[in-house]
Amino acid sequence: MLEVEAAVEKICQVLPQQKRTEVVALLDGLGRICAEDILARVAVPTFPRAGMDGYAVRACETQGASGEQPLILPVTETIYAGDSPKKGRAAKGSAVKIMTGAPIPAGFDAVIKQEWTDGGKTEVKIYRSVVKGANYGEIGEDIQFQQKIIHKHQRINSRMIGVLASQGLKEIRVFAPMKVGLLATGSELVALEEDLSEGKIYNSNLYTIAAFLKGSGSEVVFAKHCSDDVTALSQAIQAGISQVDLLITTGGVSVGAKDDVPAAIQNLKGEQLFHFVNMKPGTPVMASLYQDRVILSLSGNPFAAVVNLHVFYWALLAHFMNCPELSLQQRQVRLAADLPLTKIRRFIRAFEADGKVSLVSACHRSSVFQNTLATNCLIDQPANSELKKGEHVTVYYWKF
Image (cartoon, rainbow, N blue to C red; front, side, top):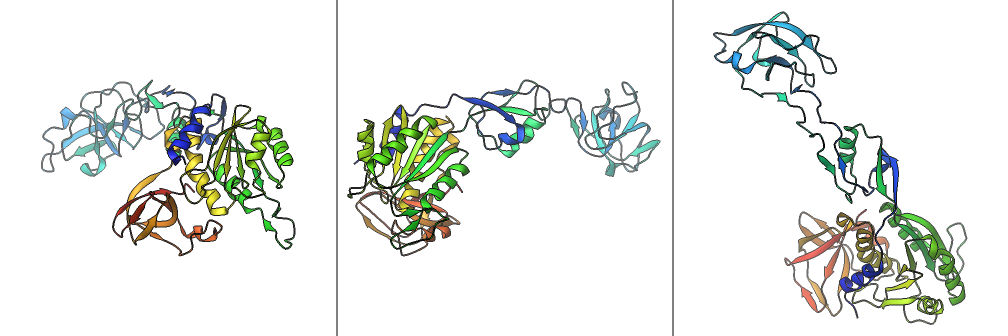
């Protein structure tokens, strides 16, 4: 069987990278992937500004000022944030009362904070000296004109939104989201609005995975149910494949009599990239290529499906959007209890806090899902390993 990393690489070799872009309103760019390098079109600030409330002065004129021998300067005006100085270049031997963020008139090179003065209005007593540049924000102190502020393929976060707003940008060009279709297979599944009858279960996988995809920023083009029937599944795949960049199916990938996904792919003359991967749960995970689109087929068991999705999807999304920061977040932490020997690589639901990771339940069946609500990560236990309390292990965090 393939290792997870080799299986991911097989898909990435045939999954193209996103080229389509779109322009969105600035706030709608949050979480999107920037489609171009963005250079500053204005310096921030565009004028020298005061770093605190006080008095704009020439630093050299304050030398020697003290409580015993204060420097006394006439105050020629008061400038608030948003004001434009009324006078031109400042006269020597003068000061300007100024507030934080206000423009500093030409000729002054420092701001002495108000606490070091008597706070005078028409003249001010200055009790300490100040050095050139003190509390003085130069033009471009924050952002230089033509500085690259956002790189192509970066994921836009809230801080970037603020920086872009400081440039007066109302719109941003981003890559179009990955379009994903979802087919949940299984004749035992019923819609949420239906009553349960014997042998039936609600189609929870459809909602879990659709929510996961939406949270990641991808566009869920369709999320449908398909019964266990090779012809019906083939038709559903054929009808939806041209609408998406990636098609995800759940269920029907093992070796049972009703595991129809491999037969449907064969029926459509699609190319199987791999079937079965060295991982547990979700060993039967499968990937195929049909009409130049990737089909990722997950296990039908709820926890196994989510593990398959978590391990494969983020790597594929990072590749498709050419944005490495979308990849799984991992960390080395200490194990809080022994893990018994496993022959096959295992991904175990767990909770990490303060650098230690522990199991949340004695039940690890792939059909059991509710106890994942008490988890925040998966432990990656290598094949043929027995892990002891205190050892460092790799954990992969749930993204949301």
